[in-house]
Length: 65
Image (cartoon, one colour):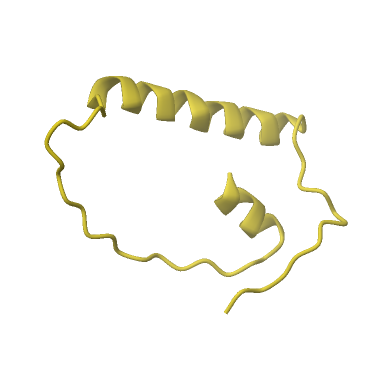
């Protein structure tokens, strides 16, 4: 959603790599996390496409450098 809002306000976005370390005993379940993320993305896409959600035009934007 933040990427969609950044695009709407023409805010530049860069990709940053992350070093991932597997931690024993992690509670992440790949299958359920994937389904949950897909549903979240589908909700965001639907809400912005249909106009249910819109970035607030008077939102205060501050550039962080």
